[in-house]
Amino acid sequence: MATVQLDGEILRNLGIIAEDKNTLSKVAKYLRRMAKQIANDPTLMSKEEFFARVEEAEKDIKEGKGITFTNKSEMNAWLNAL
Image (cartoon, rainbow, N blue to C red):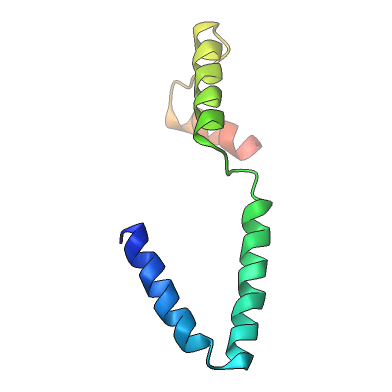
């Protein structure tokens, strides 16, 4: 669904919710909680940060700093050790 469609759907639903003060209060509380979780998510990054990390990883691989596995078992053992 396109962002414009989502925006429209959210606004329509907020119009309905706004008529009930109790429900509106619950929605506001939920949105605050969601926003806080998103703000504290260390995996979120800008495009610039993402591509900088990709470039750094590519540089590390060229310098031989990458990790390689010869089979699936080795990879799983390494992942389980994290």
